[in-house]
Structure formats: C-alpha cells, structure tokens
Length: 410
Ligand code: HEM
Image (cartoon, rainbow, N blue to C red; front, side, top):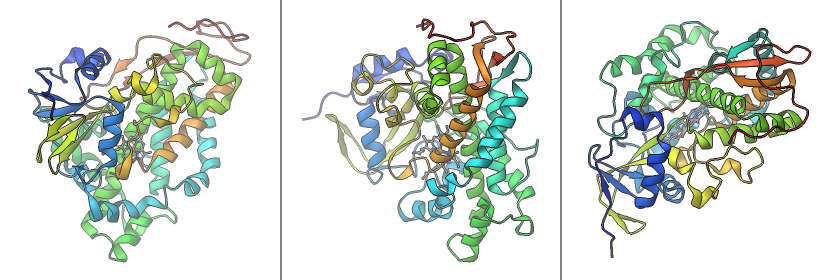
C-alpha cells in the first residue's frame, strides 16, 4: 500500500531558501521520505537514511542521466556500472589512503607556509587561504605548476556545479562556456611532453596508452577531478575555519587537542554540506518509505538536509561539536559507488591546515560577515574575513587569549 505522496510548490532556488535552506529542510523532513517538487519536476529526498540507501543502490538510482547534468558530470560523476568503474580506476590508486599518506609532509609544509603568510597581519580571508591550499595541492598532484589562471571558485570553476541542480536549476548564462573553462586550461597546460612522474596526468596518459580509456576522455577526466577537487575543497576548508571563528569554545577545543582537526572538518561539512544536493535517475519502479517512485523520474538528494536530520544526529543536530561520536558518518562526501574518491586528500589538507592554524593562532574571530557564493547547488563563501591573533601578538582579535573554554555563542 503506497502512501499519498506529499507535493510542494516550493522553489528550492528562491534566494531566501538559498540564503538559509535549513528551516525549509526541516519542514520537508516532516512532510515525508520523498516530496514531489512540482516546480522542479523531481522528488526531493531530505532524510539521512533515505539519502544513504539511494546512494548505495546505484542500479536503482543511477547517476547517469540524473537531472540536469553537464558535460563535466558526463565524464565520471554521471556514468554508471562498468563505464563508471573504468574511469574511476584511472586515478583510484593515486588517491588511495597510502598514496595520499605519502604526500603528508608536502601538504603539511604547504599548510604551515600558507598559514604563516596569511596570518602575518591582524586578519586574513579564510577563502583565500583555502583557495591557496586547494589549488596548490591539486595542481601539484596533477603535475602542473601553480598558475593564476587556474579557473576556480568565484571564477568559472563554480558554475559547472550548478548544472547538477534540479531541472531549471542551471544559471541563465554561459554553462557550456563555464564547463569548458577547466577543459581549456588543461588543454593548454597538459601535454605528454610536460607530464611529471607520479602525477595524475601521468596516470591518465598511461591509461590511454594501455587502451583503458580513449584519448578524448583524458582531459575531461582530469578536468572533472580538478574542478571537484579544488572547488569543493575550498568550500569545505573555508567553511571549517569560518565555523571555528564563530565558535570560540570549539576553537579552544581544537587548540587544546589538535587531533580533533579531522572532527572539526567533518562537523563543518555535515552542518553545511559544500555540495547541497545530488541528482539521480530512477531506473525501475521502487518503494521509498511507502512512496512509489516510477522509472524515469528524478530524485534530488538533499545532502544538506541529511546532515541536520535529528533521526540520525539527535536533538543537537544543529550544533557544531568536535566531540560528536561518529562525526564522520555524514553524507557530505557522498556514499556508495560514487563516494568521493578525493575524501582522503580533502581530509589530509584539512588536518594540515587546521593544525597549522591551531599551532600558530591564539584566537580567531569573524572580522565581518562572510560573502555567500551565488550558486544553486554549492554552499559556502567567496570571502570570509577573519580577525586573528598569533602567539605573542594580539591584534584585531575580539576574543581574549584562551586559557579556559569561553561560553559558546549558541
Ligand atoms: C571538501 C571537499 C570535498 C567534498 C565536500 C566532496 C564531495 C563529493 C560528493 C558529495 C561526491 C559524490 C557525488 C555523487 O555521488 O554523484 C563526490 C564525488 C567525487 N569527488 Fe569529491 N568532494 C571533495 C573533495 C574532492 C577532492 C579533493 C577530489 C579530487 C581529488 C574529489 C573528486 C571527486 C570525484 C572525481 C567524484 C566523482 C566520483 C564518482 O562519481 O565515482 N573530491 N565528492
């Protein structure tokens, strides 16, 4: 027996919803396991358990053909089955925990250097710091030199993500051109002659030479990893620093015990998923918590809502808490066969950057309101000014040097 499906005329792209989607997500979780969004022509899925089970069931809910995907998604994110496994295998060894662990020293050194450079005055921009970290790391691993022309956040790099949105979610202008920005950059910068040993581009060309992928898949594949790897990492790292700057008690905990850097990152991306939603295509009729979904329909998985679901996270789901048990069980890095292959790299960068900040800085506090990124699917900031004081110097900071945990602002 199927329940009557809840429907809604809600516009997920309304500026007010984009500004603060969490009250809307809460209302949607109360409506049911899936809500028919008339305006977007998809089922929105707001609950943690349902999102998780859909991500795991990639045969029933395919990434390929998921609503409104761009050419970027068409390379790897949106492929399925053997085609997906074939593309994903190309870089899987380079991104495995052991391979990422070998880069630890490099990444730590980059983090310390960048933190020292960015905190030399009374303040810094968390987004600029995160951008320098993510671009430097990814370009080095790709085997390219850092270049100011890398198309990233608040340039064109952001825009391809908007095409992951529910139907009609694409921005009005320039998606093809935006999706092409990283492709153009890589076409200009990646040649067989300039490939570095051990780099991602070397692995990609080796796969071409071994007949595992076609020559014309090479640059789009590198582009997919570079765009996702840079932009979502910028949002995740900057979001974590901003969260800590707003929460002196949790910042104190991090300084007391820098081993909590990983939890600081997990909690920040759980609370404010950098990728707020993912599209999937239903392949055959299926029951979702008593609601019948038909083959060919689209589902929109609200990762941002799953991260706040009290059925999973308890009544304090909205709190930022470095001591939360199972903080890493969020879905903001995906799950199932398409789970983020860059998660170890993202975590390694987060650990290095947060530990370097905790070592060097006594206080962090917001200097002014952060500037929200104007995108439909990604959530985060294009600027987040932070006041800072470092050991032995107290300038511009609003919080006293931390000797005991202050009251949380919440
Ligand atoms: C804070 C940082 C990051 C976040 C929040 C994030 C989030 C995600 C999410 C939610 C997915 C699932 C997409 C889906 O199921 O359709 C995903 C997949 C993916 N991510 Fe990440 N990611 C991050 C960092 C990275 C990094 C550093 C890389 C590159 C090294 C990367 C490369 C990818 C790729 C290639 C996929 C597609 C995987 C597939 O379809 O099999 N990501 N990411």
